[in-house]
Image 1 (tube, rainbow, N blue to C red):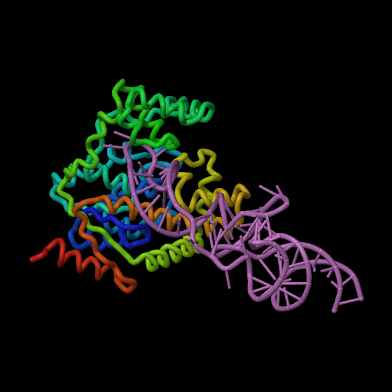
Image 2 (cartoon, rainbow, N blue to C red):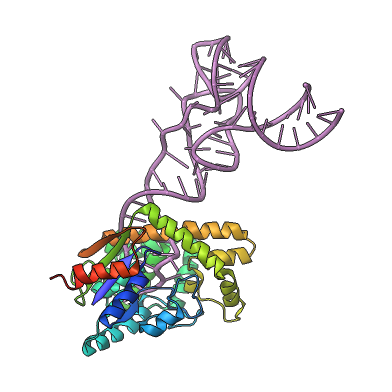
Length: 306
RNA sequence: GGGCGGAUAGCUCAGUUGGUAGAGCGGGGGAUUGAAAAUCCCUGUGUCGCUGGUUCAAGUCCAGUUCUGCCCA
């Protein structure tokens, strides 16, 4: 079982593909946006012929208007992992959604899933009375979580209160998986690292290519569908900005520039997450490294280190 | 050539009646347990265009000068 992580546009998918071919394995995508059907260009999904050659899981599994989150991801991914392990097939998990990576590594707590009505109620209250109200309520029922969650961090306050209201127990009493240091499966963790300037060049080139490949038309098609996009899908880098262009908030050039900036931020965010992961074997990649070459290195140094 | 306005942080700009500068954006760092490509936190010394002058004290007033925008010839 191999788990490949790294910054966006760093070559994870291509390496996963090469390794899967060599090992005759299957790929599990760890990506919160590639799960959506018809969001292909902006999420840098593997090409249709690559999807033909190697079995990929967790790609195109929900509709763009569907809710998707970490809980759904784990519900769908864990049975696949269990089945492949039983069959003795190599698993190559690869992707850039760090929270899902952490979940695959250490598991998630056995607690209640999201509850839309409850969230709406809490959000409404927060917008009317301020997030401080939520924070002070959390302080009463779960001082530990309140100490960790900033009073402005609405999303975490809402989830913490949601768990409390649904179970009567503080979220901090559930949250014991992450940072446990125990891998749920015997993953070999592989990281792809690149120098920052080189990474930025690749990201800019990728954005340029996405636009040339028809990103704007792809987003147009998605928003033209009466069923629209779920909140999660509409947040994706490359989609959120083009939607603002459609709404007249930005010019196309501004939107494209914002996509580049937000891609860089995404990568920065990923770097911060990865720094906290233990036991990752990092490979420094250079501009002229090919996926085949990197796969050879991984086979020789990590998979079969004689 | 004449008139008016700009010139201050990488960018866009604030800077009150003179007391050696501050916002947004970008950049950097961090948190992160069912929204996570989300959300949140921390982080601002820069020849105040240049040269003189007035003043205890000038981004701020005065003179000159350079560049720049607009208007008039």
